Length: 434
Picture 1: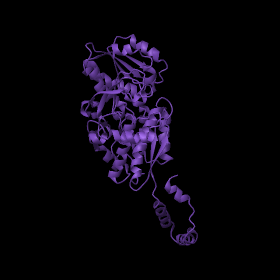
Picture 2: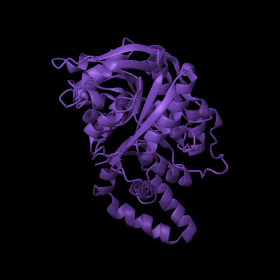
Picture 3: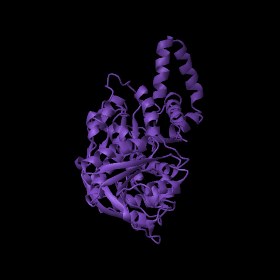
Picture 4: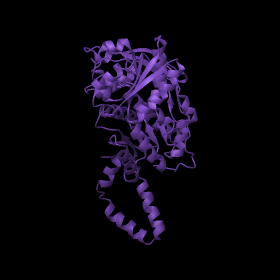
């Protein structure tokens, strides 16, 4: 139970006489003044800053959501260990918005109007992020999108109150397609696309890079988000002549699909995946994988990484994901960025915090990456290092299976469409100061 709540519930034996005298005096004072005095008395008990972590804890992103929450917890615990924020304790509450966009929007509405949360973070699924962040914008609540990577999140679905901290599939495909097409004499590309906001947005962004690097799209296979027939998808791909397969399929669907692919098929064609998270790799170490993009790995030789991994393993080393991945890393730094922005602003007022986030920059050392990172004030999307990786299965030591092949600076993988993003004005964004 929160400390303040405990104080309110504890009996105060010294109140009896003093309280009766105070009540008599208050009754002699005009009502407006009396209410102000009572209100100030309650305000003396500092209320916590409540942050809602919203992510689908059931379904194909359940493990991602758990990893995301862990990153947020680690950041919040660091601030609370040194006294909280602005003299207030930070409390994290969790909600499952499911993968239903309508229900997710209702969850956001309830958290704001009924639970009076101060800030929201999470999402994981881009459709969920789009729906919930639209509700947050209407009330002025800052929404930190920690780990959903649809390019549309920082263009058509961007908001003044939303900040996106994961790299997008556009960033990943920018690097991956250049790498894959450079090694192919013939440059026929097949798009394999998940039928949801993330899949279609990612495939649309890929088309530009395919053309830029001399390739030609020869077809597109669109598959349901539930992926009921992975073997049938593989047959469709095999029936079309392509040198490169640009795959945009997310979550546990990747495990189901690649578990049925003959490794020789991956040798004949260059398969690239817009993004593969640790949560899709580590639980299935024997499953073959092609080229993919990530933003961080637990065994990077970057300052601070080994210390962060040690803190994570000390707390979660007994769990299914006993090593942290890019999802935990992204959520940790996204939450830390929000808390640091509030601290710099000296207030929870959303306009002041937004202005701090819009000009936030981090050194490579601070981010545990190879290049500095910065928040784009136009699109509210974090520009950061992109790593190209592959998977050399080691069932005996699955944590060592991931191999980093290279990395690119933020300016080399930038999604150009973000230069056209239009955010709501501050005048059109309600003030909200939890």
